[in-house]
Length: 277
Ligand SMILES: [Mg+2]
Image (cartoon, rainbow, N blue to C red; front, side, top):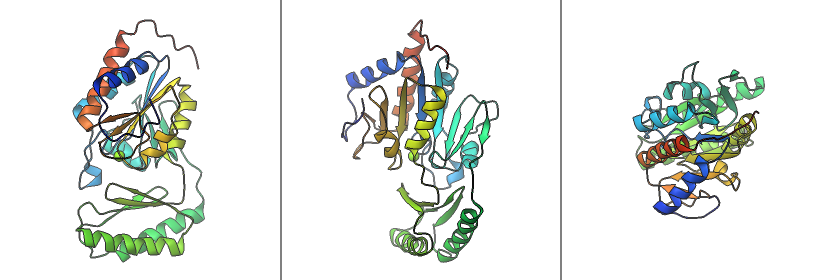
């Protein structure tokens, strides 16, 4: 169920087939983007929260044997923990900054190695980006662990363009080696270039998963969707986009329902033997 280029929602028989395949997987990793996938996009980034149906499905899956749940987000890990209302006793694994930072129940926060020069440049460029966009209404600079993001969701189109041009010029002259990513009303700049494909690969290794389901709604999620293997299932939330996902659902509520059905089907699979890692 991967690698199909399609832009319309997946018909029910194919959805069901994907669910049956996942339900019968011995060791299953359920990896999910957060914003726009489990939580509606909002004007104030730190106000994002999962819809209740998604939260219930995730908690249910995380409590099942042989099943691991992870959030894989472009947010910094510290912000992700806040918006996901993630506590120290949670069984849910986290990959932040697209897969450059991790939190696991066994290890807690796994601190990434950081170079002081990179951090100093990050702080200077972020301050300069704030200066360059000062007075541009609706533009917000979001600090990130390995760089920063320029949010323009609340800005008029011409103002957004002015902000993006100014910061693009700043970063391309001072840090041309940084990775630039675009998303829904955000441009992000980072000195680390791990993508969500890296995040999924590390989580797969750690859980010894036989198959992965990954769902996301944005361009950066395509890195992960393209990296999936034949036994995996990729889900794109939102129709009308070119995607490497094999399954397309129209919205967050549909994904939550899909995850709820996965849990129900997996509960019925008696005798799953996932062995020992
Ligand atoms: Mg997203």
